[in-house]
Amino acid sequence: MRIHILWIALLCVACALPASAQGEPAVNLWDLEGDVDQDGMVNATDVQNVINRALGLQTHDPNAGLRPVHRYVVASPRVALSHVPPTVTADGETVVPVPCPVLGSAHNFRRPDGRIMVRLGSNVVFVLDRHIEGVWYPRACGLLSSQLVLEGTPLDAEGTPADEWVLIGHDGARGLRCGPSLGTARIGVAHRFDRAGDFLLRAKVISRAIPLPIDGTVEDPAQPGEELDPGTEVPDETTCGAAVAYDEVYVHVRVVDAEPSTEEVGQWQDIPEPVTERYGESMPHDSGPTHGQGPSGPQQQQGQ
Image 1: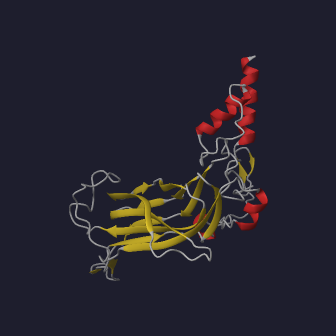
Image 2: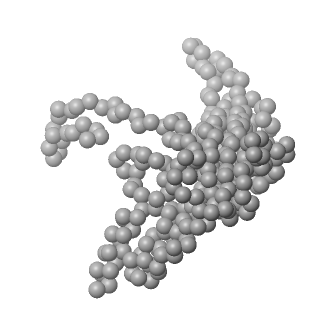
Image 3: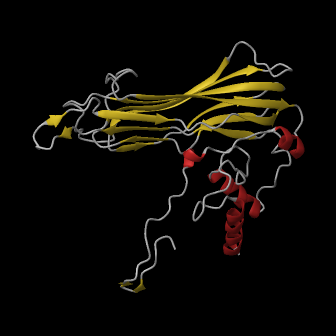
């Protein structure tokens, strides 16, 4: 009997959670249909909620959606540091030094400005999405960082913002290491709207890639990927090869007293889709048909 119940629970989980990104990509990357408990995230808690309901251990609370938590992605930064080898001349002897032996790159892939409508008392978490990435390539040392600063101001009846921006919060992540290494982070700022009206929020996204000078101390680290001494002096943003990306994303938030209807949300809300460059487009397979025989039969073309 317990086995049958478990199978039913697993089937319910499969129906409630979004399909995996196997085969073709998801149509709407901002969809949260699997957010069963409406906390703004799809995680193990949602799976447990589905299982509990299937087993009759938990009933659905009709008021659970009255004060939902919203998750709004503002950008998807990419930062990297790469080593540039010196140029060897045709005679194979003379080495031509490069101006910047380590080059940094930074791009925020900001989301276009948008509008959202929430009920009074809702929490909105403004985040840098889970695809944020920092890459230290081999023999490249330095600082990679991303920061989110969230500010807000009320709007008057004509939609004009107030003169002063109020700091809501800030969050960020940084790494000081040598490559090869890959870094990820979760960055976000939450805000609860306890007053009805129209508000304009400004999300400042700052990403940095600042190289360290290559010398005997960091050129060939014993443990690539490990954090360097926090006391290591980091050059400023004007150092050779440094890259800094700064973007501002504006979100108009309308806070209403009662739960808005689907029609009201559809007519007013404007949530832009992510830019193409953020997640990239599928690359076509670079393989032609083969006519040879494999160990177990004819070979098939890649991607079939």
